[in-house]
Amino acid sequence: MEHEPITANRLSRETMKRVVGEKVGIIAGIILLCLFFAWLSPNFLNTSNLFNITRQQSIYVLLALGMTQIIIIGNIDLSVGSCVALCSVSCALFLREVNNAFLAILLTLAVGAFLGFINGAAVAYFKMPPYIVTLATATAFKGVAMLITGGYPVNVDNTAISSIGRDNVFGNIPTPFIIVLAFVAVTWVILNRTKLGRHIYAVGGNREAAHLAGVNVNGVITYVHVMSGLLCGAAAIILVGRLATGAPNTGTGYEGQAISAAVIGGAVFGMGTGTAVGALLGALFIGILNNGMTLLRLSTYWQDVVRGCVIFLVVLFSVISTSVKGNKNILKSTFSWVKGKLGKR
Image (cartoon, rainbow, N blue to C red):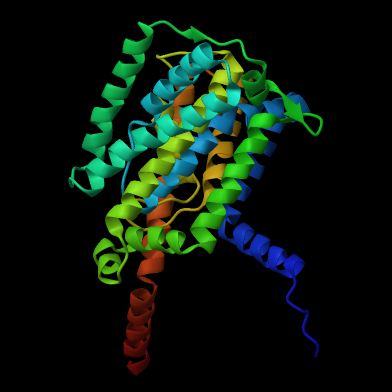
C-alpha cells in the first residue's frame, strides 16, 4: 500500500485536523450559540452583523492572545485595560507631534512592550506576586494616562490610522480582523514551532523542573509579559483608528474580557495549557454572546449575569475534565480492583 508523500498540503491538513480536534468543544459551542441567536433574532446572521462582531472583538482577541500566554505560565495580568488606555493616548500624542502613522505605530508598540517589561521584571526578578504587581501597575498606568492628557481625550485626524480601525479588505472583511489573524498566526508559530514556545509550556507545566532542565525561567516570564504589553499596544492602535481619539478613561473591564476569552478558549491556570487558536475562538464566543444578547434587547444587568454564569460553567467544566484526565489511570486501576473483587465472589 502506497503512502501519501509528505507535502505542505498534507502537513496543513494534519495541522488543521489537530486544531479542530483540540477545539471541537468551543467550536461546537460557537455553532450552537449562533443557531440559538439566529432562531431568536432574524438579524443575527446578517453579513454586516457578523463582520461587525469580528471588528468589535479584534481588540479582545489581541488581549486574549497575551493573556493566554500569561495564564500558560501560571501568572495573571490585571493591568491590560490600563495598558491599552496609556498606549492609546500615547499613540494619539505621537500622531499630534510627528503626524507620521508608521513612526507612531512603532512608538506605541514600544510603549506597550515597555509597560509589559515592568510587569514581567517585577514578577520574574523581584519575585513579586503577579496579581499584586499588575493591580498596582493598573492604577499607575491609568494615572499616567490621566496625567499626560489632563483627563481629556486626544483627538486624532490621520487617514492611515483611521484605515486600520475602520476600513475593510476583500470586500466586507474588517481590516482589524485581518491584522488580528496575522498576530494569531505568529503567536501560533511561536508556541508550537519554536524552542521558545516549548519553554513557555515547560515553565507553565512545572517551573522547578523547567529550571533544572536549563530553561531560563525568568527570561520566559519577562518575555511573556512583554508580548502581552506589545499586544496591548496593537489593540490601542486599532482602538484609536476606530474612535479617532485616544481616551485616558478607556480600557475599563478589558482585563475581564481578556481573561474570560483565554479561559473559554482552553487556558487553565497552573496547568500549562492554552493556545493561540483558543484565544481567538474564546474572544469570538464572547463577542457572539454579547452581540446576541444586545440584539435581543436583554437588560445590561442580565447580560452581566449570563456572562458570569457562562464563564463559571466553562471553568467548572475545564476543571472537571482536567481532573478526570489526570486521574484516568487511578480510576482505571480502581475499577479493575473492584471488578476483580466482585469476580472472586
